[in-house]
Image (cartoon, rainbow, N blue to C red; front, side, top):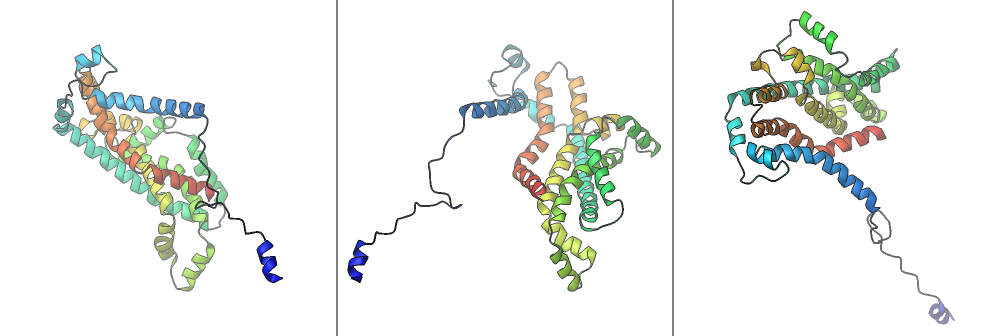
Length: 298
């Protein structure tokens, strides 16, 4: 009887193979072609000016005049090599590097400490302090440039790189605090309690636990601070007077005025000025997206 029953019982159904996320394997469906077309259109609008500037540096003025949208033929490397041999370019490059690195370190260090206090401790006016930093996002530097210049002048920092670094740190803190506070709030209190039981001080917990756990957010604000500082033009324009202290954005303006008739050289100088920030941003693009995603989830 048992053998007959076993023969008559239906065989178990085989389940369709599943992917890594548990979904059944199905052919991937492409989205709406209109969506892809619009996305490619936006990408083209963003990339086309950059390509025009970079490729224009490899051309001659006659090529740019006769065929503005054509590829270089022949390729002229002398525009770039001539600028790279210039001591003025490397001096402005060094100034931009000093300003960008110092501003980034200040933004990350101060922003991380402020965010740690707001996220992990309860005190009076805590909400007002956080709201004050959030309100700072609504006031760009261009609005406060005149009173800011007067303050810098009173401090004796005109034509000094510190007159650019300190305001950039101040205006970079709101974005840093808004991004880092969710990261620090997401750290479980049990970790801090266990560290306190083991005899770890608050500073020890901050450097040994908080900084490593919030590293994605720290990297994100560091990249944003570096790129924003490198590309800043308005504040150096007001503060810096001598060409020896110029950063690369100001150097582009001066070079464009001196070589206004040599369009190819101007395009080559502009390409070299924007290339470090462009490469830096492209390399760490995934870190930026991951850090902002973590901030939203937190």
